[in-house]
Length: 92
Image (cartoon, rainbow, N blue to C red; front, side, top):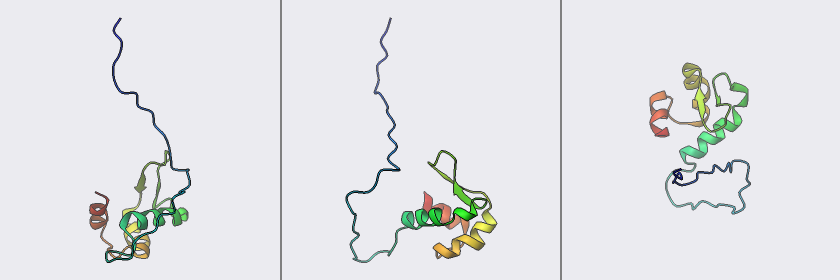
């Protein structure tokens, strides 16, 4: 019998581990709140709008279920742009 060779892959979910470092951002130019932070803030606060935008059941991705409502009701609260294509470009 041949032994299988390879690297063992073990998944660790660190989403519930608290931040112990206490990250402090420098205040030198650039944007005041980077896109990923704004995105997390939006997803955290818009729990009442799960029909429009929200986390998938596994919690590793989110989905925009109603693009029209997303661009008219939710995006203006958190982002300067209100075009879905601009939002999608920032995700990449």
